[in-house]
Length: 248
Image 1 (cartoon, rainbow, N blue to C red):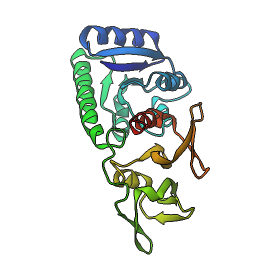
Image 2 (image 1 turned 45 degrees about the horizontal axis):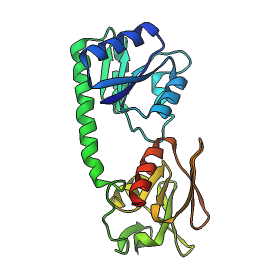
Image 3 (image 1 turned 45 degrees about the vertical axis):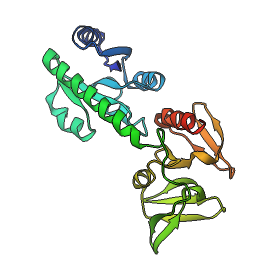
Image 4 (image 1 turned 90 degrees about the vertical axis):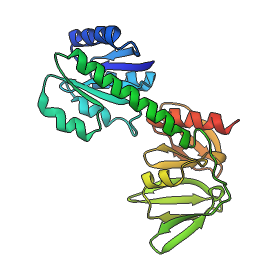
């Protein structure tokens, strides 16, 4: 079952969509509804949904503003609006669907089916990330580009990584640090299937060197070298999965 949240400022629209989903999309369960962006953000943080049905024109903030509250978008978005001219903006934020009101049933079913396929693909891809199976030898040398050439590091040497503009600063077990010209996204790809895990838009950590994990609203981890590293809200579930695997 897909967990869904409906964010729309009009109760009639929320109720209509919920009824349509119940009748025509049995694989979707609406776990929360919200009447504006801020309550939508809270509902997402609380329920960790697979799918958001997001209105665009709402009081105070546009639906597009909701996306800015998350370091990483781990849910699919289907925009629901009475206006065609937002379609290009929706494309730029990688929306899965764009439904015009009043919502056409066939288009709703088609959009939901696309979400189901995307979630299946994501589940298959997760077999390649750290939270499933770290399978690169932590003592194997990995080459990383710097402004002066290549450096060679093992996973066991790395405590954590931090964004430094377009580059990334790597903090090592020997209390030294090196600067790679890879950005954080490139580092995340480079260190797939290792114990290095992204926990914030600006941070990656080595699960092997976590000393404490403080699970509060402004969550953070304390590493063995004493450094505090912030954990982004949208990365908490990924970190929990990584820790549960690593603890086995």
